[in-house]
Amino acid sequence: MEFVEKLETKKSVSQLEKTLSQQKRNLQEAREYASKLQREMEDTQRLLSITKSLIITDHFLLRYLERACGIDISSMKQQLLEEFSGVPVSARTSKEVCELKYNGHKFKIANNTLITYLDLLDKKN
Figure 1 (cartoon, rainbow, N blue to C red):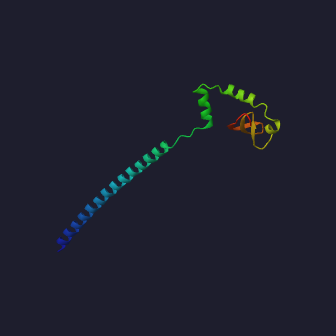
Figure 2: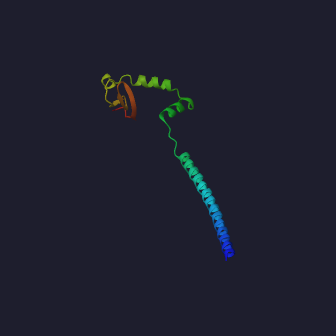
Figure 3: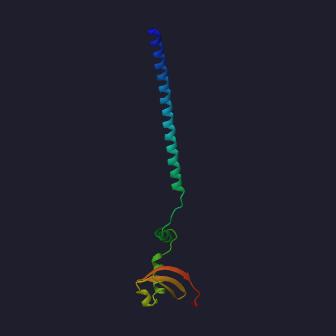
């Protein structure tokens, strides 16, 4: 009887070893699959970040116009200073932002700084 019990114990151990071996293979396959999913997720995130629209700053646009299109920004700035030199002093020295119509143009000014250009108006305004 002892021999039969030993044989059955060996058989049980052998079955347990086979089961353990299969579970280890399953675990390895699951890890590989999880790793593959992680890589795919990272690739997808990378693609999403690349395909977002580029943002163009005003500085980039200014330098592009100057360097790629050959627009002389310094001369243009000087022309604008001459054109807007007649803006009333009260508007130029105001600490608050003023919306102003002057010589057919509509713009914002504050603290002696032209802030933004709004519109080209009919010369009657």
